[in-house]
Image 1 (cartoon, rainbow, N blue to C red):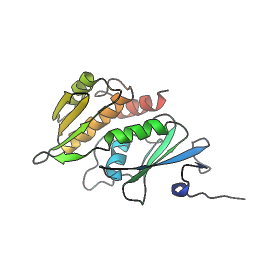
Image 2 (tube, rainbow, N blue to C red):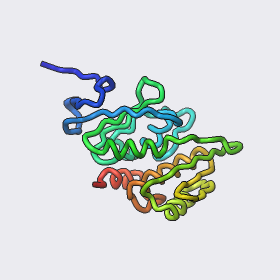
Image 3 (tube, rainbow, N blue to C red):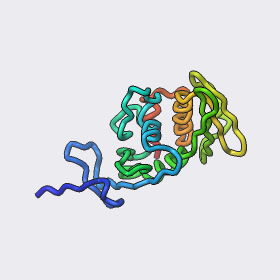
Length: 193
């Protein structure tokens, strides 16, 4: 007898992975409503080291089997859904850690002039001065201002993408955030207890 479960309708209950999946059971799904950012923008942040260009397809999911993906613990995926303003986490463990990271990045991005945007994040665990120094070392660096535990970044959309991935790495203890290669950073992020 075969039982098929639709993941998006699971409502946080355990679901089975397909037979060829490397994931162990039970997997759980957690829905996250977004307030400010689009699901595509956040999936791209977790899935790719570089910001997808206009002609590139934004992935539907950040998956654990992709070397560039930044996912904690035994998180299998961060998925866009058909529901506007929603992401779904699929994980055995690490869902709370990933949800906190999504909340950290679900902040407004405002235009700051031609080809420039500004965003403010409030990392809970990253050391502010080291993080500021790290994002300023990234290629095409904009500006980074640290005040009251908040980091305000202003620069090109491509630099902001790299800087926000640097924030993710720093938030989850991957060091040094600016110099980690995609493969090393993803592996270090995933192996954190």
